[in-house]
Length: 595
Image (cartoon, one colour):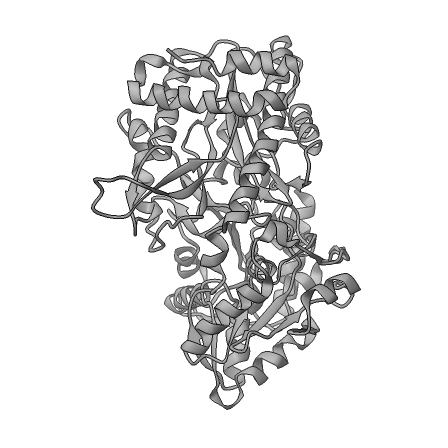
């Protein structure tokens, strides 16, 4: 905490030197990535908060950190409340705090590379309400005082083979370029590395857990691309793979290139939801006629082609083998009471590493025993980890990156005998999971329209959970992928065939236990003769037993029991030939009929 206080003091001195009273510190990089390189972990460096979403606002005599419901307990544990007021970002948003704490005449600074235009508009309005002003800063004051800032990754971008991608870069570029030409748009600026990685069929190792090369790109209506990436990131094999239609520029020349791109009032497309304010500033400076529109790679990237779906199924079979071996091992080892969170999650990673095409974890494993399971995005440490004790729940949320797919799965396991309350809550979560997995819905349905299905059984008992029910998942890309999602938050994006989303309702009793059951599911067409509209449903991709010992069968109806028994039969039939005899014997018992 002393280190944090010193850093906060140093930042305030630098703000005074730059002539501003305050500064916005988002958990973001220049690309709005979820997982950012170590050199962009500014919020963690300043506050100690290590979650994947948040914002700090620093003023001369006050500071606050804003996190969502996933991270309230984590922020309480990691951030010094004497230095930073801790706020729920939706219940007490940063805009209200700024309006209440910025003094008349004061200037609140921001780094335009780290915020989108809609964010800046909200913060400017809040500063104006306080009688102050918002100012774009050329030099990030936090970077000026971060003396030991890590260097960027030197690892290269590599080709992503067509046998995994399913479509060539030329085909992808041609399709999007045709839409640009039809809209009489000269070019589109791409700022999301996962969009560029998908478009060019390349991958990298510049950020943790997601195989991304950090870069920007401009795709023109003639299907040519200029890729802005650090020198040395493109070895000869990758440069040859990209082909002559892809030119390469230096990142330091990107600003000038944006200004030149829009010269003469040319129509240039950019996504205000994902591109930074700096991008729009440069385009405006060059005289561009800006066409605000969603990143054109988002939908074709999200709607997986048949090769990608086949790869996802294969990856989940391999992942299911690792998970089943792990659960069998845990069933044998946990009753002794000697297992602890870190060792258990390390064992799961070891099983995964034996799988073909494994490239790493897709996010930091959440390994929470007992009350730690109630912290939605808990990260075990030597100081916080607990033993897996009899009469408790153990929650493990984990995933892997394989060349042919990305996985994400959560299982909650009863260690010994759970209490009647624990069984009740587990079963209500399971009922919600089944309701979503088994639903059918007409074309045009959004995830927000389905969200209540997963919550219904909990709502009937006056219970709920403070996170979304489902997020999109990439194909050897981000484990959290938009624009598809299943959430209370309204969404205009329909679910379309090929999209992969998670199905992960939960329940969390602070200080006691947490429950979450998560499978990945793919949107697929459903053929029904009597249907008057085109129907879609879900194919469950994840293959791993759900703990029957935690279920209260009396709470389930016949259809729900049949769903679970059918799912378990599929898990058993698919994985038994792929595991050792001892694991197969455990699996036979774990997936037996509930009735």
